[in-house]
Image (cartoon, rainbow, N blue to C red; front, side, top):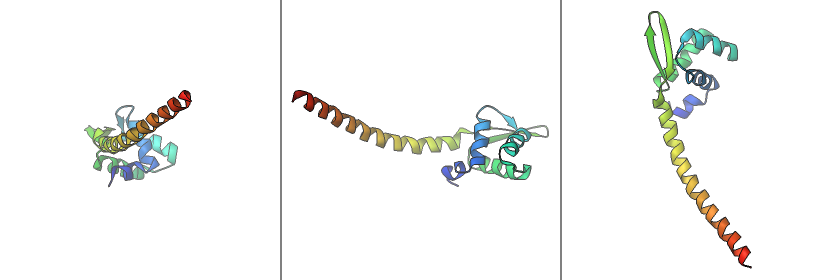
Length: 110
């Protein structure tokens, strides 16, 4: 699954927003997501699985608890794509800025 397909789902984005604040037990994640979206524990588990399998979340066992945290791997893929886009737009915006400055300079000379 492509990184943007993972992030397209509002439930998964909400889970990531929660995980970015620190490590959370799966029960905590379920409680928050259930409150926000009304999803069952099984549905939240599926979303956590998608995040894990696509490099957006880590899980570690602590006794019978499962603790989730953000995995930056998936976010790096997104950042790389955005950086490419940003570079292209920055070049174009810089060129536009240069043309605007030239136009202002030409008007001042008149």
